[in-house]
Image (cartoon, rainbow, N blue to C red):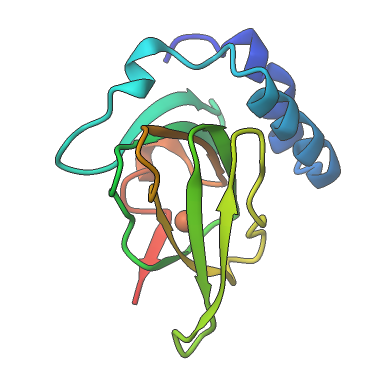
Length: 157
Ligand SMILES: [Fe+2]
């Protein structure tokens, strides 16, 4: 894995220390000035939302990914096995949150620069979508090791 982009270094430091107030602040900064965002992050994959790995903590404490969502793409409804935090770098994101009986609790629309509710306890059940007409790029941090990235994050209902 290549070294971290300098614009994500402070965010990674806060994630490493599980400094949640620092994480909130550095997350907002990384979304306001997404120097880490590369041209390919705007392209996406027509068959489904696409994860781009940005950084893997060498001790397995967390991973940082960009996710590209083309218009109309949507995640499955899911919860998390690990802590997670995410926000919007470009485009507009729609998040629906559900209670444990899968009733819809709320729907939020997040613009570029905005952070979603953090899920530190793995208690949030949600579904994320791009309901806009332009690509959406979101930034995600997960308290998971790189080797468990594909299987160790989500819980499905
Ligand atoms: Fe999620």
